[in-house]
Length: 620
Image: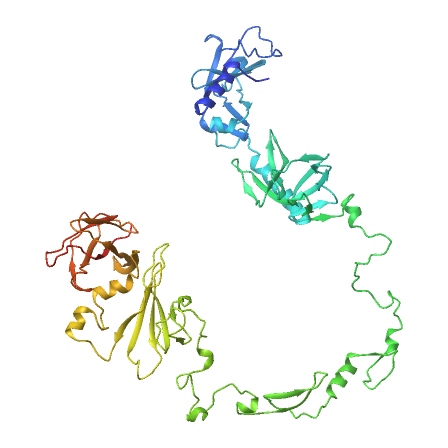
């Protein structure tokens, strides 16, 4: 029997601790005089025989190392008939650092070289199967083990798969026999009962009740089934898992696992059985065989009248639709004659309206050609409201197209033309006693930023024709601005001071309208670069009064990717509410800048009012 030496065991521990692979390089064959083949290998004293005793060294190719399962690996050597002549009774496995990893004592065996016609040589194969926890991972072996002289792996795997598929055709995805593998609760312990089940064609058997321990509640109990290699065989392996959802998967060794739900356990400990159960308690041939007895769910087909005692049925049928007997069955011929004889007096032809009696029969009909004749009273027809053609909502205001007085303008945020007229005195409106068409636009978009704008165009009236109002939404709605009056453009002084709305509002008016308070705001403006739509980040705000000979630091609400362009005006309360002067920002960075008092001595006070600023650049 092969045995891992203590030196090999120590090498496993060292390699695991260092997270380095364990590499076996060679087979050693030796002829040790007086060696007892039945004696166990002395793990402590085992060492490499002297050079004079070693009869052959086999450098093992990489492909001669394979794994059986995660905890078993096998090493193999093939010695052809071109090698010999020598005898051996000791075989060892040596690691790449020279450590004797494992050894085996065998009866004295011969290796002969083929020397025609004097001597017939022999081929021999020797395998070492090594088993320890994590063997596959530590040795970094990725090749599936196989019989190197004559490989039956594919053939045997095909047989296993055909058997599984045959079972799958019979039992389906999952079939549990009666109470097999049922989850129950005994006192305070959950258990999995014994029995038989077929999962994806794999036969699962448990001979006894097994306790199970859920990890949390509520949970689902799952049965995890696989055809697992075990030494030279393939066996059905299964385990119980817990979780909300599981699906079939392939493990690191390439083995396919099938997962089916056994039961749900609620937070209160209530078990809901989820197995697909068949009441099979014995051999299937007996389960499916028909026996003497009553079968309420069995429906016999191709049964003759004599079989069921209806031999006189041909004498109890008739083709006469006028028969009134309770003992005669009407034939299909009688039913056809009856249907052909129906005449309710309604002439054949197309009808737009029909009359139906309580029996569902059509008793009359008509063919109206006008809307009013059809009973439709809420449609517009030619002649309504003095029009030669059908009137539409362009000709008059329909009550259903007007929002009620309680509708708040802030609630109108869907992009596009609002389909109802909204009164200007509704909450949040411009305030005029008029109805408006409302258009909503998206001014820009970036994650976490809501930027909308509303345009209110008065419903056609002579007084407000050609005018419109505007407001924007950043963090809050800005005050309404009359953004257009096509009846006039305003005088030069009005254009300068912003005293009257124009086609293009001045910078001061825009800032005053956008900055309802000292809180900074921001918008995203789309632009095109490199064939793609990009966005510029525009931020604006106003400061507190800039102190005499002092400054105020401004911090952008959102950081820029690079230094932005900053412009702005200062106001001077000592002169006029709209008297302004541009200022040069100091120390512009991606996060802010400084405003300095830049007033010119024009009065007794150097105090400066709030500074209005606007920055534009690339968003971070």
